[in-house]
Image 1 (cartoon, rainbow, N blue to C red):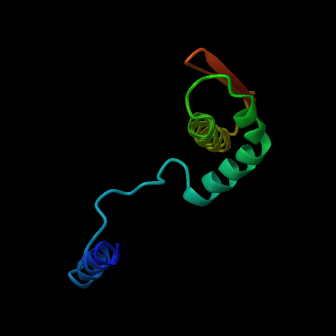
Image 2 (image 1 turned 90 degrees about the vertical axis):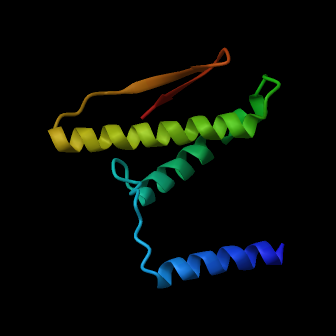
Length: 105
């Protein structure tokens, strides 16, 4: 385990020393910090869905993936409303594996 950690550390440090420049820039449409805040807010609000899951799949994986997508969409729509100075009530429903979640902002 420590050998792998040391290899990764050496790789990252040598990249910095050699002038590594990030090629792909994430968080362009939705900034990272507001996304994380919205995700944590929705995760706390809808955590009870994990206990009501009736599928055979891992509820934490699917519920939290859906919450992540919902967080991103809500912030994207908020940004759109701010940019156009128009507010339109938006809601959405996830349909996946015959289960749905209706999230309203």
